[in-house]
Amino acid sequence: MDIVNKRRSIRKYTDKAVGQDEIKEMLAAAMQAPSAGNQQPWQFLVIQDRSSLKDLSRVSPYASMVADAAGAVVFLIDHSNLKFPEMSQQDLAASVENFLLKAVDLGLGAVWLGIAPLKEREEFIRDLFKLPETVQPFCIVPFGHPHDEGQNRYIDRYNPEKVFFEEYN
Image (cartoon, rainbow, N blue to C red):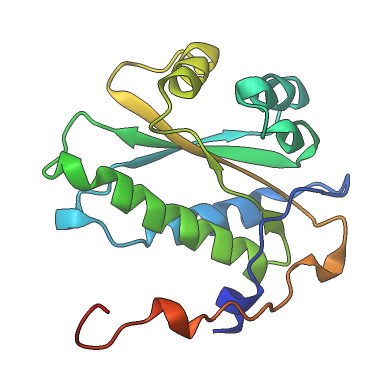
């Protein structure tokens, strides 16, 4: 599980492009995530156009790195045919984590930028990309080659004070 231990939020990228095959591998990993009732509510908007990345970086004060990334994926929830709509955000969270782990596996860096449930951010993306009302922006994941190759490194975060056995005390 070296990949799990190495994954970090990478916010600085080189100018090197990320190939379509690598993007497809990350998206395929995202689609392997578990989902409630196998509803697979995810859709993915891949952005690589420099102008669009710059526009997208204005979604929040924490998204400036999007402008300099090789690309970004806007993770979307398609609400049109959900069996378990209350579980869709959990489904997307699992999908995002798979994407992030595959990025590390490919030697890339990425960071999870929250959108939902903040309505102003959702509306910004909905307006920018003319999304239908049945499609909800969930998060943005910019990706690229890490500026510092050593950024994806192990940091021990295990904290026994957060673990309880048999009863909460």
